[in-house]
Length: 85
Image (tube, rainbow, N blue to C red):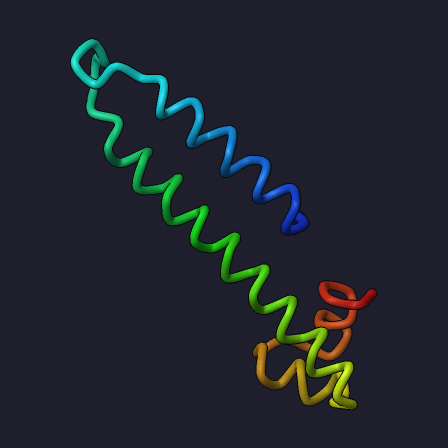
């Protein structure tokens, strides 16, 4: 199930907060792989937000859902459901 950008931001913040509180020396295993996942996820949230802004700008400038969907590599219906207001 797709998450909204706000939900992704909340999850990313929770993960980062949990990992920031870990004492690296007392951890029973290296948390670096999890930190990398959290950082990559946070970047993906930022990209999702940027795409949403670009899609809304394209719609505001009269581009069709079909044209936007082609740029996203998804169906027209998927684009409308994901980014429709």
